Amino acid sequence: MQRIEQPAGTLPATGQRRTLSLAWLTLLGFFLVFVLLLALATFLVVRYYHTVTTPQDAVLVVRGLPEWVAWQPVGRSIFQGVADGQAIREGDTVRAAATAGYGQVASLVLPDESQVDLWAGAELSIDMLRTTRWNTDTFSVALQQRTGYARYDIAADQGFQQALFKVTIGAATVELTPGGSYSIDLRSPVRQIALLNDPTPLTADVAVRSGSLIVHGANGERVILGPRQRVEVDPTGVPGPPVPARWELIVDGGFSQYTEQEYNNTTQEESPTIPRSSTWQISGTPTLPDNQRGYFRLSPICRPPDVNNLCALEDRRTAAWFYRTGGQTQGFATFITQQLGSASTGIDISEYRTLTFSLWARVLYQSLPDVGDRGTECPVMIRITGRRESPADPDIERVVCVYTDIDDEEPRVKSDEIIYIRVERSEWTPIRIDLRADEWLPDFRYLRRVQIYANGHDYDARVVDVSLVGEQ
Image 1 (cartoon, rainbow, N blue to C red):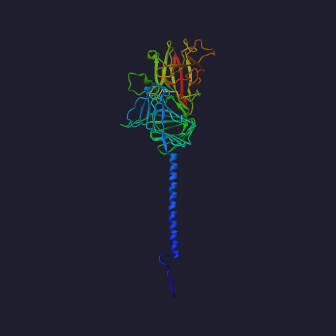
Image 2 (image 1 turned 90 degrees about the vertical axis):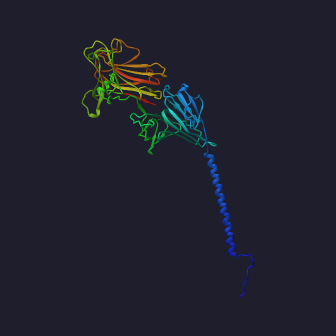
Image 3 (image 1 turned 135 degrees about the vertical axis):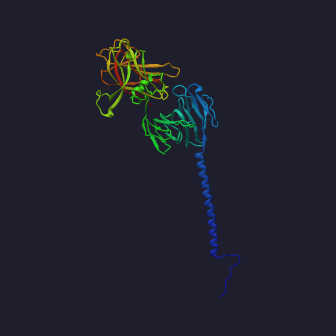
């Protein structure tokens, strides 16, 4: 058989096909790699375009005296003076002096016209304040509130597709929704254990006027608040349940935190170490012998308006009892007084759009007819003391006289500075006062004390369920 030899330098057809396929596969592989690299580069460029951010500035507005506000620039360890209208940047901290006046002491105006107002004692840092550089995709704000009370009014029309507002409060974080109005109050808890060299733990009171927010607790729990709701976050960062946005400003309005003796021990100024009430202070005037003075006592009662003393345990109450007998011929006033605020220094009420004082009153006996010869001798009187604008303003009082009478005629003597309320003898009567009414404290920003007292000759009167509720 004759052998056919292939020319030198040639490959069988199958080898040629294999080589050609390998070449095409190699080219295809390089092309795919090129396409992937091009796609990745395009993705990174697009992502960079949409995500790269630019730091922005907030504008500081000083609403009180300049010395009430201090500023700590980023990287500095001390606070320094401020100028109205100056820029506040990422990392900066603003502090309002605890001794400042009432209402807003300073404000931070953000680039989108959102506003953060600081009250006396508030301290706030800007951790992040950025917008995307070449588009309107994102506006990111991260703040850290360390102390005091602040109000957050977040603009609704942001001009950004996504607006993120976060406030860190200790170990918890609060997300604020644009278009809402919110408040955060950081204060010392009622009971605490002080540890050496540790900062004081603070309780946060987070509230919503309008809009909604989410509290992210340190334990991973999420609490959502809607309009007119609030939640307390404990010093460990754990939130409680949502409750209505109402604040009870009177402490111990049911006279149940101390014994009768401990309330009366507040009259013993020469013995400061004896157990005594820290809520209500008892006093009397003028100085008279013991058998001619009026007395403060506690009276177990049934829940008003029940005047009988037979009721279930859950309906039992304790009333403050003003008592003076003996056919006295000289006037005497028996007072119970509460200095408002956690440190008894008063409270800023500028944020409360409604402010309602209430109690139940019962007059069993008064020896003087009507309201006495001077119009001020009543078995139950209520005196509320406040200031209008600033700490330099004088105290202004509003006084109510609660009395009973045997006829329906108006008292012969009245004071223009007293509001008179006539009640039926021996019956429980609810007394409710709108302190934002024109004749009361419509525009007052500070409340100092509440005083309830009996004034006259002989009297027997009781009050219970004393309350002062503020709502924003």
